[in-house]
Length: 264
Image 1 (spheres, helix red, strand yellow):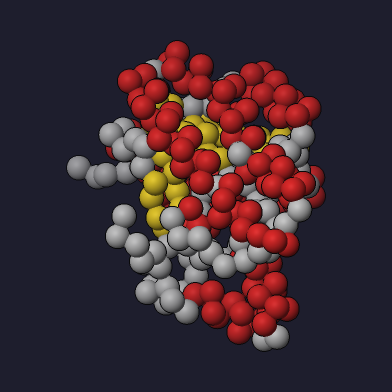
Image 2 (cartoon, helix red, strand yellow):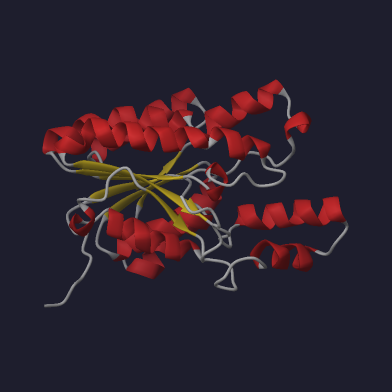
């Protein structure tokens, strides 16, 4: 018997999919046979992402241009999904809020961070859950961060606000598990994405070191000895989205090359 993850016949929604982890996940889900819808706000990057997903998987995704921090764009995304067919798989990813220490943040920064990291997840989940419950099958996977377990220097907004998604994972897992819907979270470590490159540039500026040195420092304490790739997150998402993961519910899973040092 050959064990193979197949998502044929499933529809998947991937947000923040024009680059980084979202793009890597979209590539892997499409290669597993899912019909993928990608969402991003930059039209040029969105078109490039469509080509990259098609080249990787042989399947071109359906693309929706939207800024998920805007209410009207969220409404339009749901309308288009209802027209095309609501997804069975929802992978929620987003770019990170700006770096900085607590006292460097203004109150509007906290409001913006909530609108970026949490509000779209709540809005889209409310829109998609009834469909998943009615068909007694669904997969929701939220991308969070290791920062929710081990706060990271100079990332006050992310350290605080992303914890809400862990609460959402545990709450929904209890509420909808009996309907055949699983809800899990992924805590990525240092993955080579534009966001990590931004953090490296910020570190270089603050500490007066080169960009290459700042990037090296980001992975210096990773036992695997390297940065992760977006596709490596995608492989876990494909598994969690499959029938093989039907009893994994409410989990917060690190994908970090062994970086996390806490026991729990």
